[in-house]
Length: 280
Image 1 (tube, rainbow, N blue to C red):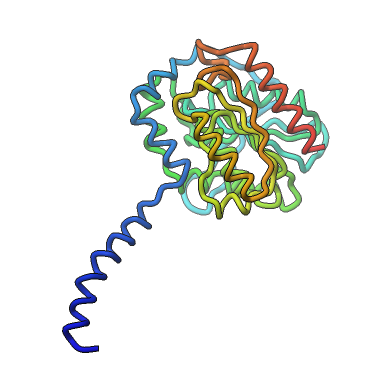
Image 2: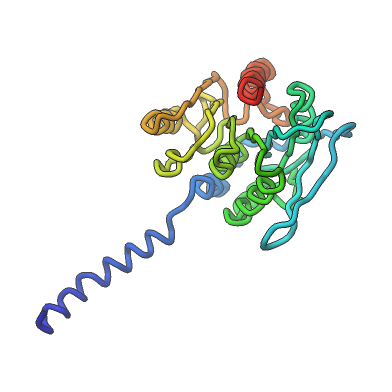
């Protein structure tokens, strides 16, 4: 190749390669995309401050596991009365691992006996009580740290563990991600109005069936977002059961002043039945 052609190709390729590299390094995961909603003032305004609540557990306790890098990871654990290799990983909303989530974890342990419950703390001990605080904390979440926490617990429950995942809102997205990370250990995934995964390659590796509980009046995880997720799951021959409710985002959160008790109870029954069937 003569010198002129080399220079010409350099002029053409360098900007293209620079753009491609920038695009690659800046590609966001679905969880990072959801975390960016913290900058949406309408999203923040839709999450009213949680009603005051204190829960005194009779069965659960806080536990921790070491992480390969960084501080230890923490969770609220409710062990089965009898030894069990079945686990449900529970993921909190943008408020953090508060007493509402701990109560839900203990409630699941009663409704689904023979299963251990781990409500995993993705905020490293931070619990927020105002939309402004939660907005700030969720916006600062690091995808790498969250995955490190989840993977540490996946390893801690052992190679023979059967894992189901469940989460709400921000935690709904992490429920799906945790099932992806758990690989063949994952047996069921429940996601309440969480951000779906959009990467076909990742979905192709998903092991468990998914129950998606969504709100038709959700301005963020919209019916359009849900339909795209459904089509993607179908294209990869993955089972997705969708339960749509005439409600707004976070309708099943008992700490929300706009909590819809009737619809939340129906959604909860669907979730429990789904988990029981796949963990039996």
